[in-house]
Image (cartoon, rainbow, N blue to C red; front, side, top):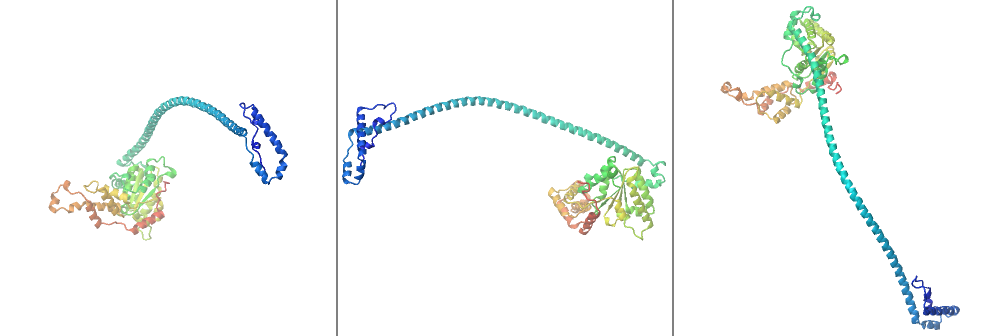
Length: 503
């Protein structure tokens, strides 16, 4: 093995860079450097021979015999020490520099923090001032909003007042026109027509007087609002009849009131009551006559009566001529039909054709029937609007029951009325009236003959739910399901639909 001396591993001390602190070498160091150089030169000369003796045992023994001198060891330790000291110095210097830099940065950050604290304080004061301004502005805005809202309410109140004044003005004008019309109609009705009245000229004065005394209806006033249910029918007659008769100046031409209106449906559904309500609300004179009167009471004078009736109606226009059981008079024509009845029917259809075109005023012909399928086709065509009045539904039956018993002493609760309205499915208004009439006798049935003769009206027991339950067991609807279906079928084929006005 090649032997390398310890000196080969040493670096001359004079070549160590130690900065400004180690720039000069001592004599001992110089001598050590010289000896080391000489040994290296000798070693270089014998390199080739040592390679030849690489595996020689003698060579290994000579190398092992070499020893490091004390000076060389000290120099080596000193070199290592100085290297370590130099390294530590530079590390320290770097740390000091970093420390100074960190201190400078910290100082700068502290200054920035102080500056930011000052800015935050200023901003906080500005923010407080702005918040105070915001609060002040918010309060001012709320005050203004309250003022605006008050002004709006005032404007709305003024608008409502103006609108009310407009409606009042319009109502006064309408009432004034109606009052003038009523006064003129009353004048015509109360005083006999003069000979120069063209419309009545040539007619039988005695027959005119009979019509005024027996046919003009002066009974109890009824309004559509007093009729339970039938909302579609009531709205329809409002649009078709009431409004056009009240404002003929608006409903002209195609919007004019129809000549004929047919009310059909099961018996007892309020056809006559609706006709009276229409006459009352429209301010029209109401002429009421039944077909049976024309064919029996006025037998032989039917044709003349019809002509005179329409003339008087036109004289007292606006008027409503209501014919109950119109199917009896306007049935389909037969070959064996009585000549007087045929002439009366023909005269009626002629008058119906001209009812809406009279210059004296509008005359509406209203017919009521329980058998619309029996009407003559020509008559059906002349009744341009045909309204189906069905049986009352449950809410309408409840309202009817409450109305019928309202003027009598009773102990019925709300639930009782609900139950009764549910148990009277299929009952007409007339059926409900009969039911209430029978139930009203319930308290009287509990009295003995002696008590019946002596009891005070105030001491009569009230009508109870049990009395109605008993009456329900002995009464039944007057209209069957087959009849109801026949009305529905005829209405689908020929009736006026509830939404014909576009509602």
